[in-house]
Image (tube, rainbow, N blue to C red):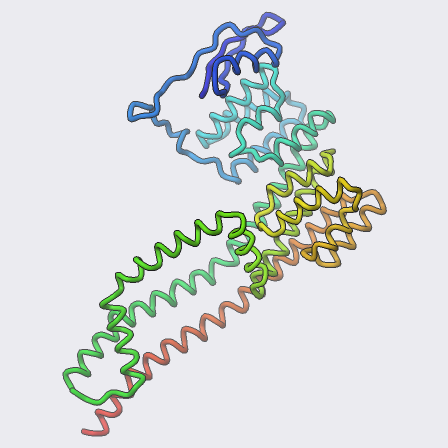
Amino acid sequence: MQYRYKAKKLSGEVIEGVLEADNRKLVINQLQKMQVFPLTVEELRGGKGLNKEISLAAIWGVSAKDVTTFSRQMSDLLRSGLPLVRSLMVIRQQTANPKLVEIIKTIESDVSGGMTFSDSLGKHPRTFSSLYSSMVAAGEAGGMLDQVMERLAQFLENEQETRSRIISAMTYPAFMVFVCISVIIVLFLVVVPNFKQMFDDMDVDLPMSTQVLLGFSGFVSTYWWVAPLVIVPLVLAFRSFIKTKEGRLLWDGLKLNVPLIGELIRKREIAKFGRTLGTLLQNGVAILKALDITERVISNGVLKQEIEVFKDKIKEGEKLSTRMGNCGLFPPVAVNMVAVGEETGSMEVTLQRVADAFEGETDRVIKTITTVIEPMMIVVMALIVGFIVFAMIMPIFAISQNI
């Protein structure tokens, strides 16, 4: 629930804002922690039924690009010497996304009321991740918020650029797959039935290849409705299965063993591991907390499970590089680079270099996959279309010879 409050600061200034809490008492406690005296606390009522007002901001999402732009603008404004609250106000006025405007307005109000910037960001976990708020907290504690926002902006820009490269590289193969499937559907549902009608009218003996093709086409044309009845329950059952811990681990493990695809996932996740952990350590976050945050950022369940073991082993005094080598998921080059970083006391810099190296490896694997997929799709398409043409032409040749 949301509560609108009016409170008085020690200086006598009256401030207003909105806080989220389960009840009014928790809001008052939070205001007292902010060292302000609550004057009024009122619940923002709107109901949950049809009478609730639906605002554009409530349904508008905040994309990763929006957060990246926010971080870059905040970095630039803070580095130019503008105070935090004034920076938030400037960004709010320049932001087009109504949902993000609403969030920035709440953060601005919280910071004006005495709450730390990181705590206010933590109230919006769907927009600002734990990685984000933890780095900001470290920056506030060390008095280098402007530098932290610069690193966050660079981190998010790198992530966005890598994601864009992957999407861009996979667009053409996806289009090829779509075209192949569309052509095959048209052939089976339009072209082949027309030939079948012609062959039936001529009453000729058909070769086995033609009989198989016509039988399959007739089955698809007649029983196409069976496919959704089978596919939809299977997809729903599969999604339910991979939502379980055991199912997720099994599925993620299988993906890692797929040729090329598994290599792409592994290198991408190692790059993300190095970038996230290195950035957190560079900003003064303790290694155990940094590993905890990194675990949440990683997508693959197998690697997430290993990072959870990392924390226990490091508590026992084991080195990070030793644990990385023992788990079997990290290649020797990454393990050796981290080991050198531990010996020289520059592990955060080394982890960033690991990320740079494996982001480059990710690009190379993507290029390899696209290079392999394109000719494979052409060959598959040629075989299918060739079989259809062969099966259709053979009876025509037989008929022409008998004339």
